[in-house]
Image 1 (tube, rainbow, N blue to C red):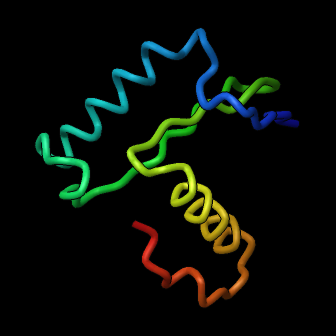
Image 2 (tube, rainbow, N blue to C red):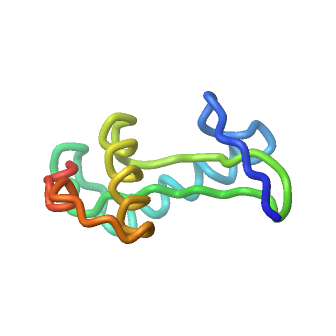
Length: 90
């Protein structure tokens, strides 16, 4: 069984440098150094150790949009049919 705990701080300190590098690299790869308001691609990166541990999070979305997107994704995974899924996240 996997026991992953959400956490108020988005990135576990031991992964901070790698996740910041990944966030910047992924954003630059998809958005070609565009300004924040001009981004075409948004993403969320979640990492966690196998087994027990804490889930670390980074994104190029603001926290409110990311939370809404994740809620909608969970609903899809559970097979729920929500009209909210069609809502514009960004």
